[in-house]
Image 1 (cartoon, rainbow, N blue to C red):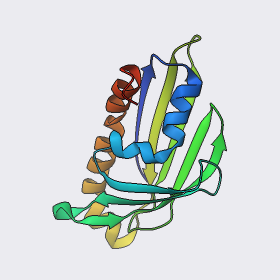
Image 2: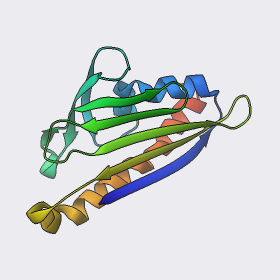
Image 3: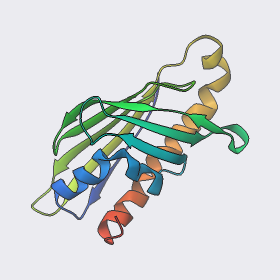
Length: 146
């Protein structure tokens, strides 16, 4: 299994941080690989996000996800439902005092067969780059640009 994880501490209350990440349409503002994303409803279990991500040679790839776990101020988990890779995307939130929140962003994906042989390196590199975008989200939230 391929995986990448990053944790940052954001100087904002947990309810503000959770609301920002729970609405996956915000990911286009801080995840470099997201070209376009729209929501089919408010953030909750079952909400689908239709997204296009950057693929090889800048080509857009459909990579829709669905919220499968939603625990306010604690956890949001999404699973890929379209595209060549069906990752699990997870955010966990831990309060650190009254106005600071620790956020962990994790990506994982299972590859097998020819995909595993040919794509493991590039997919791992992309996943690592995606979780590093958490620093951009931190800046957006802390500067009030979110």
